[in-house]
Amino acid sequence: MAPTYRGRRRLAVLSLLLLVLAAALGPTPSSAAGSAWWEPSARPEPDSRIGVTGEPFTGTNAAGEVRGFVDAHNHVLSNEAFGGRLICGKAFSHQGIADALKDCPEHYPDGSLAVFDFITNGGDGRHDPVGWPTFRDWPAHDSLTHQQNYYAWIERAWRGGQRVLVNDLVTNGVICSVYFFKDRGCDEMTSIRLQARLTYEMQAYVDAMYGGPGRGWFRIVTDSAQAREVIEQGRLAVVLGVETSEPFGCKQILGIPQCDRADIDAGLDELYALGVRSMFLCHKFDNALCGVRFDEGALGTAINVGQFLSTGTFWRTEKCSGPQHDNPIGLASASGAERLLPKGVALPSYDADARCNVRGLTGLGEYAVRGMMRRGMMLEIDHMSVKATGRVLDVFESEAYPGVLSSHSWMDLNWTGRVYGLGGFVAQYMHGSKDFVAEAERTEALRDAHGAGYGYGTDMNGVGGWPAPRGADAPDPVTYPFRSADGGSVLDRQTTGERTWDLNTDGAAHYGLVPDWIEDIRRVGGQDVVDDLFRGAESYLDTWGATERHRQG
Image (tube, rainbow, N blue to C red):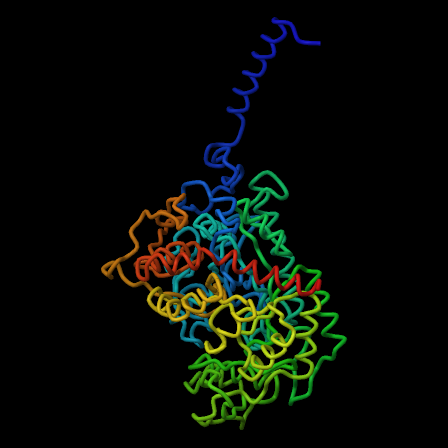
């Protein structure tokens, strides 16, 4: 029955009273940023600023393709790796930003015990250890031991146009075992499981700010169709990968494998059930599956020491059989690492004409490759020796299998044509804008020939080092504020606590500066490079979708 006029009037008065009461008792404007879907209704207070205005782009282009940038290689939760104390700070914390962004306790009072920075020469180690709210010395482009992936910084990258983030679950049992500080065991698969669980917890953490499950922008995806739907909604598709030295316990000691086919099958099944869809088979150390591509400089020396501690053997080289070659082995001194060698054991010397690892893809390694093919998983060939990579590409070409990725410039670049020929995806390491543009232009014709977009691999929290500042007086510096690549958002300098970062003077200190770095690329290299990057999401999903269809066929 329709209400009477008097009833309607009473209802209107009651509604008005409820609205007034809600305004008086509801969230403050700072925690309820508005009714827009991309603004949280319950952001923690205090928290980092995002520094972006404007609506994130949604939908597809005229050709029905998704748009957006791809970070094909990041380590959101590596603070949980290496024994839990190598990377200081967390990507999120239910206790708030003051808990998330704090230094390791052993770094007080002046960073003298930031030992890993000393060993790898990524920084001098000494620093003001206070994070929130001052951030005087970290995060920084040349610090390897501080959190760079705080969730709000990732949010800024998403708001700036990124639509795919590959979170590589990572650890290294040897680094964990020899590092002085840890608060947990060093089993690699235990760490991988923990990081996978926490990625889902981070998704729930973001969802809670937006009103409940499924409402946030951070969306873990397990197939290409789901990823496409998420991106069309304007959100960030998060893909789980694995980068570890001894997957499934597949190390080798004095050349003897410590795993078998049953271990590989069980390991792949477990990772797939966790949501992992791409992975490396070897990383840093030769294992029972494949030989690695060497590291250079002092870091290479330190890792070769780790190779001995893990396997009982140092890297061994031979002359290369083709134009591809592995990196020259680091011969620079790394005294902190070398002191870990047993008495009487010294690093070997290497012939400059022998640039290739003697170890390629083992029989167990080929079994693992074919196991990934059966499960429709994408294989990361970065970090594989050229001998191993060549065999993998042979196998994939014989089966027309497209699921091959190079996510951060760790393969010999002469493989690029074969990767594109298979339908694979290539991303370049997050180099400084000049170097990034030069490499992007070198391979532009290949991308055009194959209709491929481009990606970047930030490798943040991955102890690699990131673009240094070009300087405020450099030609064509980033001018703030600037527009996002799609033109729909405006980005100003990013502020967290009392610190405001500027790419021109601070470099790529944390993940929130990824959009600033892309703007720097545009200013240095022009719009064409950015356009290729903006096609990255579609190209990555093309590779993923073709991989899934091959499995079904």
